[in-house]
Image (tube, rainbow, N blue to C red; front, side, top):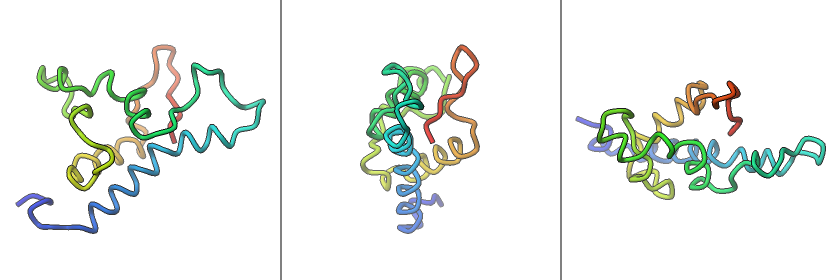
Length: 115
C-alpha cells in the first residue's frame, strides 16, 4: 500500500508547504539583501518555484536522464503547482534540499544557496 492509496491529505499539505517554502526562499532572501550583498545578475536567485527548478534541478533531473537510469526523478514531468499529485516525490525533494544533499556544488566547488 502506498502513501497515496492511504489517502493522507495532511501529508500532501505539509509536503506542499515545505516545497513552496524551499523553492521560494532564495528569491525572498535575495530581495532582502542590501545593495552591497546583492550578487551579480548571473547569480540572482529565481523568483518562482518553476524558475528555481529550471535553474538548479532540470539540468540533471529530466526525463531523458531518468530513462537512461542516471537519475531517479525527472522534474520536467512534475507540476510544482500541484504538489499533492506527487506528494511522495516532493517529500523526497524537500528532504534532499533540507539536508544539503541537493543541489550539488557547482563546478568551482561552491554550493548554490537556494534556501
